[in-house]
Image (cartoon, helix red, strand yellow):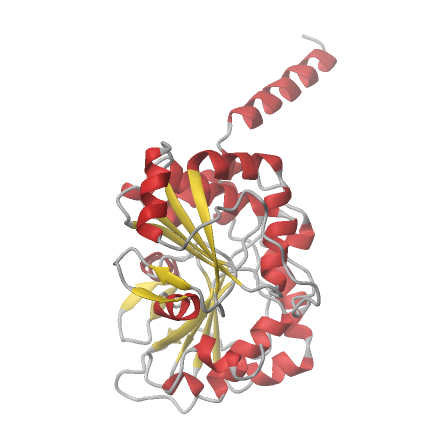
Length: 343
């Protein structure tokens, strides 16, 4: 066979392979999905016209979705000026395949996390949109909770995720994979060549060197702890280090923390804040992590305060750091705290 014939055969094989891959396995995202101005928008967000016009009676909405043969119900928690919500609408829900797949498999009900309209939740409790959002701890918008036909929570997404991971989330629930494996494992099977590539990580001066003894059960620390779970060949990690962490305001805030960076797919030994001996890979699995970078914040005694496990920019990260360094988490939720500061 000639060299040209070999080349054409290889190209055709590659195209056929790509065509056969499930939704989760095609990572060709626009870099702007990771890097954008995340300050609140001046323009008010309009929902797509295919979002369900709901009376916010979620048991009725779930029953209607099941009667229509759909896999379940998605409850969307958002804000009208949230940059990440705008990104979800402008990027993910601008893609025909994502919209078609979502509409075919789910009904989607929008909730304004500051709204006062009454919601009847799946437990039968009646409360305002704001109180419903507080009940479910939707610290970051957009948040989406996927419910199956029986009303069981199948998956929760906190924050904005690029299209290929968002497609994977839709398929994970619609095809019932949530019944037999974690979203982390499901996603890793589709992109194993990416997440298991133990390339070099970005470094920062404030990262503590190994060994990683993070035990705070016997001797509490004087400072909170930030654990960065990252991976090699990670564009979102590059953006975090190349942009937000280069901002003096962010860098100074992290200098008030004990900071550790772990490769989430490595066998690096770790003693966790609650005193368990494990590896970075196993700890990340126990925590259910699937997105890199994820930053998990612990208090001085090793209790998790909150985590940032989705795309994050300067504005959101600064708010989280201020919330933790002010110790506001001792008295109020992040959502309540930022509401008093017009965030």
